[in-house]
Length: 129
Image 1 (cartoon, rainbow, N blue to C red):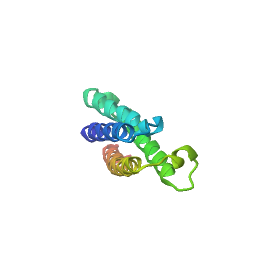
Image 2 (cartoon, rainbow, N blue to C red):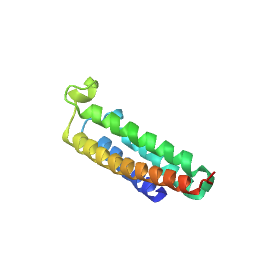
Image 3 (spheres, one colour):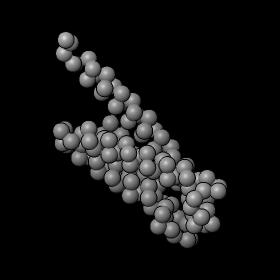
Image 4 (cartoon, one colour):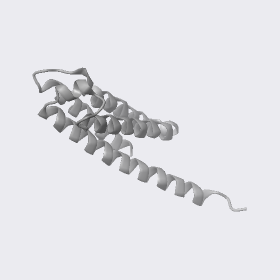
């Protein structure tokens, strides 16, 4: 799961940086996936080296991925709450939003699967009364 965190973090950083650099008009809010990618990638790297901090850091990664997923989904709604994003939306931002949605959905799928398997393993290891 830590390798996936690092890969998704790098992917989100690249998507956010490309969405900011490619269009002629630059907007700071398209860097949100890049900032989230830094958090997810750095947390995955630290969790790989610090075994005791693995679980809280993976929860942080999952919450960050969920925030990116919700933020991107709201931005993509035509009558969404972000009027500034709606007025200046271009094709590269749409592609970056689709990429962000895909990366975060894949990450959240594997994160939930990992959390459920950890819970089942913990139940198996509990002493029986």
